[in-house]
Amino acid sequence: MIKEMKQVKTTNSNFQHKFPKIGRKSINLQTELIKIDNFGNEQTLPLVIKPCVPDIDIADWAETNREFIDTNLIKYGAILFKGFSITTAAAFERFGLAVCSELFNENGEHPRKTLSGKVYTPVFYPAESKLLWHNENSFNHQWPVKILFGCCQPAQQGGETPIVDSRRVFQLIEPKIREKFVEKQVMYVRNYGNGLGLDWQTVFQTQSKADVEKLCQNNLIDFEWKNDGGLRTISIRPAVIKHPQTGEISWFNQAQHWHLACLDTQTRESLISSFKEEDLPRNCFYGDGTPIEDSTMLDICAVYQRLEVCFPWEQGDILLLDNVLTAHARNPYVGERKLFVAMSELMSFSNL
Image 1 (cartoon, rainbow, N blue to C red):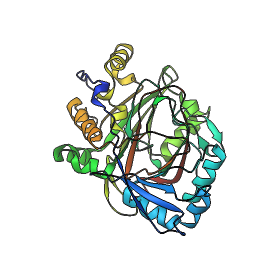
Image 2: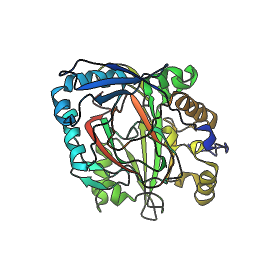
Image 3: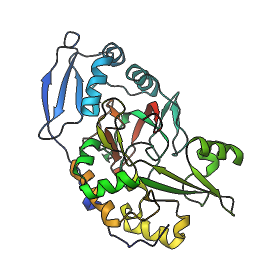
């Protein structure tokens, strides 16, 4: 099932930032309390909402105008609320509950810290590295439909959250590549308890192997207990799905987060020298277990890079994403960076 892969050199120079200009227009909503902008040229996301009057309570406004927000979120895939000065976790959570039917607790899959109620830090990831584009938890059986990011403190340099329209990713990927992924899907292979990442006790939030086995069965995960006490899991998930409301086709997976070709050279060589291929912390294949070609993954990353929309964070900004329609990333940064994260409206592949 698992064969040796050739090394492909990738560098950060392949991932340049884009800073589109904003074009402005007004909208007559609630006596023009807000105005809407959007990014010019061919970019369609995000829609930008700004205040027209000082000290507007954006949570109250959002609750009253929920239909307007929902309609535009499906249209654009992302809405940036700018200039509303939401700088505390409590205020961010209140806004989240105004635009989402619910917020749910983080599942422990990624290392995070709870800030308040159902508000978390972003995933802990080295500041000097780019966290590549992904649809949150798309390797899991369950995933959030909506994600919110709030900026408490922007980094001194970098640290943007680039976003990409997943509908356009599907459209621009070479037809032969996308057809193969549609047919075969993606197999995600993960090893816990090998010194990198979270152990299975943390991820599954239990010390009981029987509980882990039950959770795996309920979430369509194959599992294997290893002789050293570690755990290997194998999950086969779709690479492409239709949006649960609109039926639009989106490229919806995290292959570029798991495939060795998408790692920087130093990290890749370190992993290959430290682990047998079957024991790598993370790896992915086509759903039938055959290797995904390095060249295929680099072509997919090139599409993401071509479509990436990037803007600098400012304190108080909130970014609302439809997780099916929009992938997100994180750029390297310098200095302290503080963001809030919340997730909403749990969905599963079975629901689709």
